[in-house]
Length: 116
Image (cartoon, rainbow, N blue to C red; front, side, top):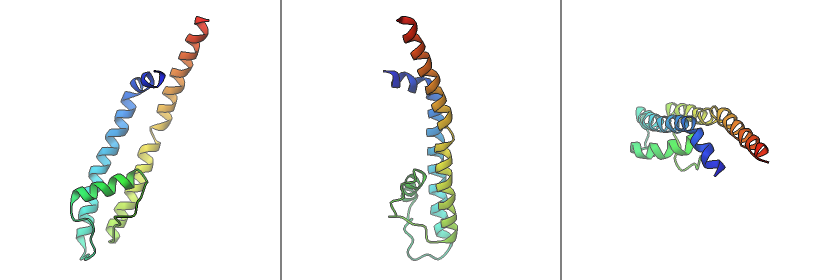
């Protein structure tokens, strides 16, 4: 119950986090698709943007299965920026979310103490 109320209180921060992650996934999927098409690349694994979407999800979440790897220098640069963006996008809202939780938890504890 406490967790659901906390999620409701932090909905704007969580929405912003999800929005920026989804926006990054779409942008980096298109970027890596076109970056791998710039040079003559016979072993190109990015034959469609949905394949790029899969790669962007795995890279932004820092899982990195290794099933899709950019081969061109431009694709490698896009991949590096994608991984850095994923770490920063997920790490930056965490202090705000933790602060909201700490505030809500202290209010809940204060209410419990006043009811005793």
